[in-house]
Image 1: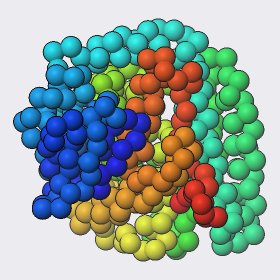
Image 2: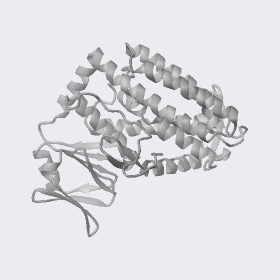
Image 3: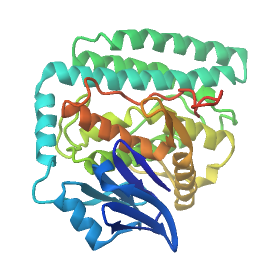
Image 4: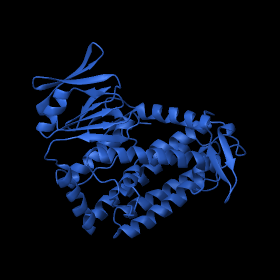
Length: 357
């Protein structure tokens, strides 16, 4: 798959090869030409997996200031090729300046939390629509109403600490009813509350595993555009913690991970024997090797599904959206966009009456 968004060429087909043809980049898969893009239309190239680029194309891009970023097939950052004068240092200085500016930090954090609440609310709305019982529908609807109030509060929060408190209350409401999205017998997949370190049941094991994978994906996305993954706005700076990657992940937790976990359980794509209980300092539930494989296959399939991006006015693979959002954040930090536009699930697809999954 070869696509161009935000003046960046994304080459997602592992067999693709990019070569220079005069003032144009020519992308081939085997003997077939897949794309041809004039260099003056591009500010950078991102290659996934085994996709490759010729020496001539790499040199031309580096000489003219176009970054070429190589990611793993799963979207993790591998390395970047750039010329002697890099814009990354200026971008990281802009990131540091924004981080030191309390007003800018607060505005970015507000938009991150608002997106998280919006997307969480959509998950619960869908659950209320498909509820198994009237009691489930009432409890889910009650939580939806609570999240609506928190959304209004988050957009006017006066400090990042206040936002973190709101986020905590939202999470408490959300996970108090999350188990009502699951339709299998509770003996197999019981869920009472969110437990992280360690996960105490199968549902929490799934959530923790996929949240970790999502965070790695988001770290690759922010590194891919030249941002420092540790300097976040909502998440405070701590040694070894990818604060910015965690900020970006907030936009995708509900719509990508939480919905996928419910789907895997309800469709019985994961089974009780996909988990093991480890004793030690408290009981810990973990996925087995077979369970991890099944979940990762489903996660990759979910990332290939296309969703509408309201800013781009077209459909894009869900797995590409964190990379697009990282690029939009970089543009905002450089002063090219007045506000950072977070990703909101549920926008209508262009030319269709359906909503995104």
